[in-house]
Each structure stands twice: as C-alpha cells, then as structure tokens.
Length: 472
Image 1 (cartoon, helix red, strand yellow):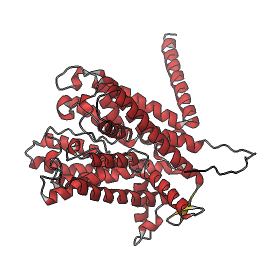
Image 2 (image 1 turned 90 degrees about the vertical axis):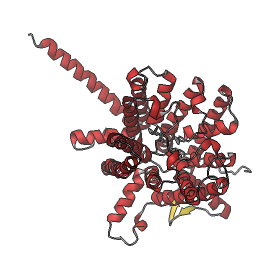
Image 3 (image 1 turned 90 degrees about the horizontal axis):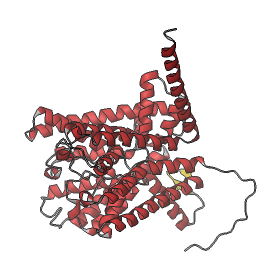
Image 4 (image 1 turned 30 degrees about the vertical axis):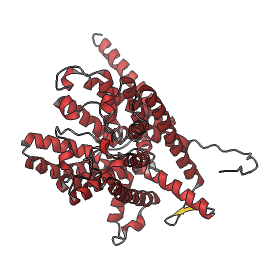
C-alpha cells in the first residue's frame, strides 16, 4: 500500500509522456513542416533564456531582451547578423551557447532529432524519418537513415579538418594553445555552417590577404552551402564503378545545383573585382594577390557565409545591389545556406529559356523538368520576394536609414546570410524584432512553404476550358 502513490505518479508521468509522443507523431504525420517551426521556435526560446543570464555576458550583467533574442535567432538560424560584438560582449559561457545553437541550426533540428534517435535505438522510427525527410528534402523515407549518417559524419569530419588547419594559424599569431583551440573550433563551425559569427577580437580584417585562413574559409563555406543531399550524391558516385566519370551518376538536382553555384561564384568574383578594384575603402589599398584573394572570398560570401574580410559598409552601392541579388538566390537545398536556393533559380532560368525558344518541355542534362516543379519554384521565389518587400517596408517605417542600406539588411536576414552594411548595432528594438522574424521565416519558411505546397495536390474530375490571357 505504501508504494501505491509512487506507482500512480509513475503511471501518470508515463501517461503524459505517451500522450505528448502521440501528439508529436500525429503532427509529424499530418504536417512535418509545422512541427519543424515549433521545434525551431522552442530551441530559440531556450537559447534566448540562456543568453539572458548574467553569466552569459562578459560584464556579468543581464543582456537586454531584444539583443538576447536577436542573437539567439541569428545563431539558431545560422545567419550571423549581430547587435553586439560576439568576441567582447559575450562571456565564454555565452559563446558556448551560441556555438551549440549554431551547430543545432546547421544540422537542422529535425535532422538532429533523427541522429538522437539513431544513438538511442540504433534505428530510425517512422516519425523521425518523416521529420528528417521534411528537413533534408529526401524523397524516400528509406534513404533518410543513410542521409542522416552522412550528415553527421560529413559535418564532423569537415569541421575537424578545418579546426586542424586553423588552430596552427592562430598559434602563429601568438595566441595561447587554449585560445587558439577555442578560436579554431568556433570559427570552423561558423565557417562550415555558414553562420557568420566571429569570436576574434581583431575580426577578420587582418586575414584579407592570408591564404592560410581564407582558403579553408572558401572551401568550407562552399561545402556547407551546397547541401547535404549533394554531398551524399557525390560521395556515392565516387564509390561507384564509374570512377573516371562519376558526375554521370549525379542526380539532376546535384548537376543543377553545382553548375549554378559555380557559375554564380565565378561571375561574382569577376564582377566584384571590376566594381571594387579601385575603391579606396575595399580593394584599392591592397596588393594584387590580396585583391584576388579578397575577391575569391566574396565569391562565396553572398551564398550565406557572412564572413567578410572587407568592410561591407565601404563597398559601392552597385556592389550592394549585386550582393542583394546573390543573397536572395542563396545556396543549395537542405544546406546551411538560405535564400530561395540555386536549384530554384536554375529552374526559373530554364523555364524562361524554354519559353523564349518556344520549347514545349523544360529540359536540363538530358532530363525533363515537370510543370509541378516549375510552379513550386515560381511560388517559392514570389513568396520570398514578398517577404523581402514586407520586411523592407516595415524597416523603413521604424528606421531612418536609406533604402539601399535597409534593403541590404533585410535580404541578408531573410536569406540568413549575415552580411551587413554596419547598421545592425544601431537599430532600434522594433527593427531588431522585425529582422528576428525575417531570420526565423527565412530559415524555416522556405522549407515549410515548399513542403506544404509540394504535399498539397488536388485531383479534380472536371477541368475548365483552356484559354491563354495576354501576358506582357
């Protein structure tokens, strides 16, 4: 009889947990994208609470709520926009919180849930597979287990390699072993996850002509921004029998994403160098090899990196406009990058080319792209532009900055890039809340919208007569 209360407590607790698990399973089956939004919001709330603790700041004082929320959203959404200096404002505890948030955001909360499921049960359940499929854009549930393993192995290996390369560079600058190791780990995760956070008190300016630092930055950023499904696809092709021409086995998504990414990167390097070559505030004072290296870094920066070795605020407005367009496009699907994604941009371009040629079908690399995919790409691009438009209008209403500065900041937030013209620390609290919402929807919104639209298909028995209105 004495054990009855304890038994009832355990039974009641297990009943609550069972109902919670059933509710999560039900939401995951009906709307995995909605569950993704809820989990991201929950993680942001936890990180905000931790950053609000006095121990999180170097001054041992409670951070203002607007700054704690803004930096929490920026870290979880791997953006990089900050209202305070990461290296000097936050304590070691605060920086650790930011680093963990970056790692969670980079992997994707749903992918991380599947990884935890693997560690506990050695297998992935149906709910975890559906959640991971929503986050990683995997078409088949059977592939999620392999993809999740590839995600964790690839991310840890690449981050470890980056750390091994960067730590000796910081040691060469005279840092202690502890500082060099911490800076190497933090910057490696920030680079690969395209987070844009810098915990170096001297910033990235001293590395503008440093190949030892910038080359890992370029490679790590590109790999992180291209997407985990592409990494898995390329790895599979390299292990196949056709080792001489492994690219023939790549999927259409991989071919489209890699080719578009490379074209945009090369074009960015050339145009940026042409615009900024003689600018005294950026490339002008540098040696030739430093100008080339800084241009190469800029080639991957607008994809979603946000780690700039040059002062963005000193760039010409034409360069800002170029970055606006590139940030809006973003990187690869299911990657740490934001934007509408390079595959979406490629599909839109192919649709325009096909229409200009009068072709019936939209084709690329020997494959035909269906009309459903094209409509989805148009919807994502339009909704992304709408988000930027609304954000810009609201920001102009609550700030006194110019349209070019506000537009740059809004696109950087919505595309989770992290580049800034320097106005972020001076923003009023309402503007910080607006950018926080843009970063949140920029990280989760495109994925949720794409999933919702892709799953929403209606079959109608009766179809209306076809008629073409005048366009243009």
